[in-house]
Image (cartoon, one colour):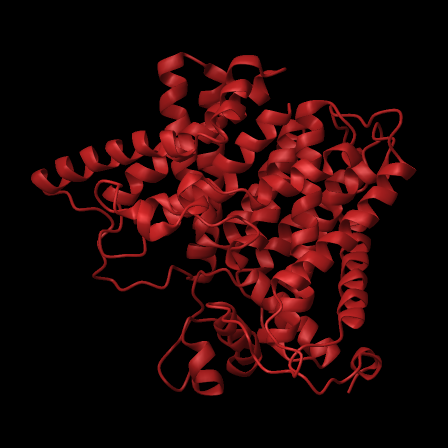
Length: 470
């Protein structure tokens, strides 16, 4: 038993005491901050440490997950690329002391730090209430869907020494059962759960629900709030509420009774129902990195944005698929609009995502967990035509269903204060259109729901909310 687990209390129920969960979560956030301060020094023209704190938290979180994966598997794996990129970025940043175009407001500083602490406390408390899964007598009172699987995976990974989708079931017998290589999966948050569980001695499900989920939610809210501050010109503390709302907002179908609305939607109703980003635990880790890439791009640090996007793509295949579709569609829109800047941006995003995939595939032999027989696209003429028409139909319906946030997207496109904000609005529409078309065209035998879920949770809905506050 190590020092940390000797301090953290054992508990008789299924969940740790709220006070201790709060303390461990805050301690984890402090540790991420310290790691982030070493990796991303504050720019020379950034007068407020509060403005740079969300990025440092994101960097620290990613590094910790990568280190936990190396220790847990007992070998270098593809997540080690996160360490390589971050350390390279840190060396460059310390030598050149990067500058951000988005300088802090004169009145930001200590008030922002106080607001951040209060926001963190609020997010941790609200997440604990939302993830409450036991009754007063300590019995299970809620169903947590995939979260139990993720917790089981976090327990089994160090035993198996192999990261596959079967590890949760096979445990230490994974390799004996014939599994030979890691697969590309959203291991980042699972490794955080595994590592913190080892350090505290707490069960992995308790760590997932009561420590990692609130910690990542806190970072997400701070990053979204930083983007809101950049777009609106307000201080970080004035943007915290809108930043939080952008992460829990959903579109019209998810606001209604799904079964009832599904009867009125033509075709397959599934692509129109999207959970919020905060709800989807498997998205949260890479969402932190995607939002970090967005905010650094808005701040003019293009090279840092590319590094964050590369790390996000390495961490899970969702970003390569969802980001690639959004960027590809954005490039097509840019060509029609004759916007050279947008064409270059779309091309840069696609090249970054391809580079991330190529790195893990050719250096580590890692690929997605799918069968060799699975088709990427059905190229038969009749099927191709039918699927294309259905994709365009659903894209049009999708525009109608995002009515609550569409004014924000339109505001950015028409009244954005700079080219980045205009592009951000177009990126939301590109993500929406590309995701619906991909839902009908790609992976006919696979899990296609992530195309539209990713686009709406990461880009469409948050950007729409940000735009309404601009």
